[in-house]
Image 1 (cartoon, rainbow, N blue to C red):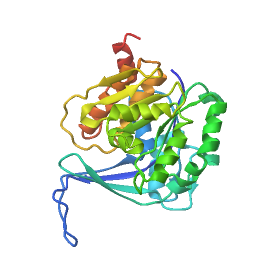
Image 2: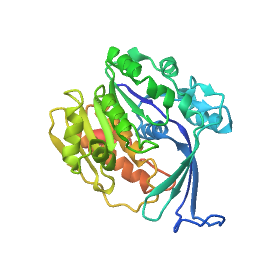
Image 3: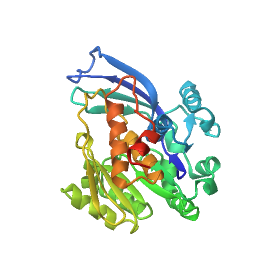
Image 4: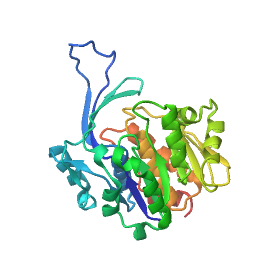
Length: 311
């Protein structure tokens, strides 16, 4: 198993819903479901990896309040060196809707202060050599994002392959955000975007064309993954060969964090040197489990997926 690390946003998620129709200002509605849980892209990655039983490192920060203490407690020894910023912890309130969509209200909190020197203080580049770093939350971690060139150079120096999932920009896919992301992808060995992000980022309506356009802008051996929600996932391997897997039909409870959970399953399987199609199947399987269970479950450990591929 190759080493794994998550670098990015860990925050608190408060999930409420479903809400339909959207309430008028000044009114109150009752919803059936509420859940306070660890959130953020990197936080969701880590929770899924814990469930899969794989080892990993995680670089994140928290605020100096009870939410920050709660987040650190949730990760135990792995959070020992997380910096505590002199601000409140980022809180994201997710309102779910009956059609599976969701609306977020998020405070800035501690995430913009997360920095590259803090990442270096938490991760051992030599120990992670030959492995993968899953970098996420690019448009929330302002200080770190400004130092991405340094982060990529550090990863290259230690032969760590970077997988990138930026998340949706707060101001949308403006031309500036598209240019920034394409520049980052030139230094990455795996792109992990959903279908809308992929087509919007490339200005290509066809997802296959869009994926190939992303790959053309990346290192020659890069992998491009497109997450397609209820339609499963699609990927181009290092040689440009296409693979696709379907998603099983499930009764959706909430889709918050589904992309992050898919990323975790896919990257864990990739780190175990599973075939690319099996990596897609692993990601789709645990994401499907996560969005359809309450309390949230991620399914069987990675060893079960390895046995399924005869490894």
